[in-house]
Image (cartoon, rainbow over all chains, first blue to last red; front, top):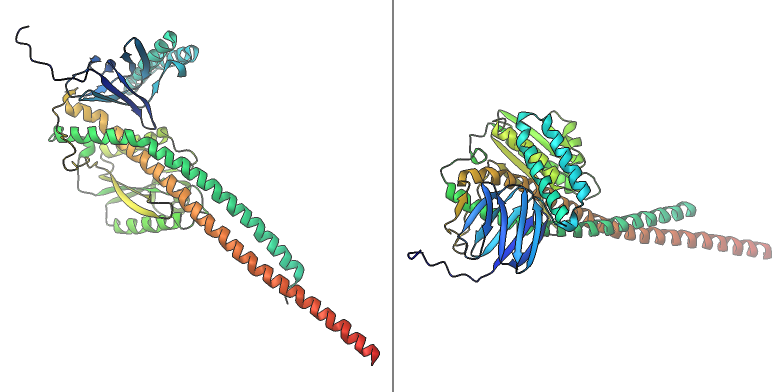
Length: 142
Length: 289
């Protein structure tokens, strides 16, 4: 479009920091970050507007040139400010920390819990399932 | 005159004790280091959480979240964070004394209940007439986020349900290795972290997704949990520091006691020898005479 607003000046790179309550899990530069937002997946590129959002359990993706890093994260939230992406989660697992069989078993367990769950537990269990699914996906992709 | 054999036995036992004190001091020192590292590791998360919460609560303004709701304090829960074990100087004694004062101060309230975190507090208040909501007896061997979450979830649910109007934490704050200060802190209702002046252009125009008030729903419980977690970690570090200092003093005292006993022992030994010599000499001179 002709009347497109000029994009804010961008350094061209994002700085991603993933922290959990007891350690910093990831701290690096990258080109693009994909996050599982509560209301839908997010793709964040350099020059993104200031943003605060809740995250659902799912897969975090980081693109750095040809390098891709994926991690299964639990629920949390993220902040984007001036090309600085901060993700706060309870837990994040990289392919190296995951075992395909164990993840599959965890998923099965979560699914079976869903069958005889009280109504108020359902949300928590669905979160667990989503987390387990993400872990299975990550583990399988290795 | 003290018996030589008894004295020797005492010196030996004091020496053994000193060895134990020294070992305990070393153990506490290494545990303290680990606790401190643990606390440091939580800093980035704490900082971010604080920043975002601060931004959000400034933004959400009027939308009163149940965890922020200030009510007249009629029903109060006091969470007493003690250690699990003794042998750490006045760590537990100070805390419990302060807690007793706090209880007295709040005694005009309609309802005052206790939450005992740590074996010492559980035992102390278990023998008294206070109403105890829950007692956790082995928290500090290994403080985990899950435990903090369990405690925080329970307290938050009770607060939202109106069982309490305020929740206070009383714990030993880790100031330095030598000093621990007993601190009373309000956990609930939450005080949104205040804008520390000019935090570097904080008021950026954020896009919130979902809305700011819905985000607070996600954020505030985490904030409470994290507060509990932080307090537990801090109390743990303070306990190790207190034990280290106490054991250091005990090692020194044992050394002094040993010196004193050794001196008495040697004097006694010498006195015995002198007496014997006098006896021999006087016996010999009697024979001559």
